[in-house]
Amino acid sequence: MQSRLDQSSVEELDLALRLYRRLLFRLPTILVLGFAGIIGVSHLSTFLSPP
Image 1 (cartoon, rainbow, N blue to C red):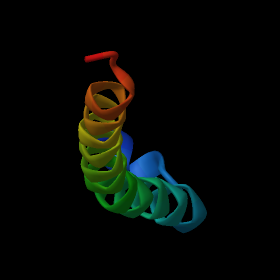
Image 2: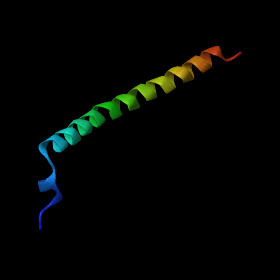
Image 3: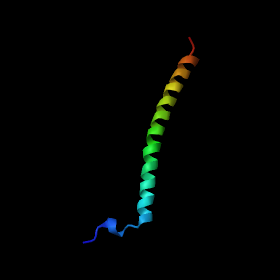
Image 4: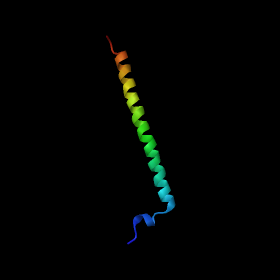
């Protein structure tokens, strides 16, 4: 029985690896920037709130 991996071309595997690497770099970046944005908006809303 042939496995699915044997039928995949090198180009398809290269594309899958490239997408996986992008995901590994983008996901933490989005999480860090989102967390920093939430903190920034929180500080801004505290600063702009009436006394």
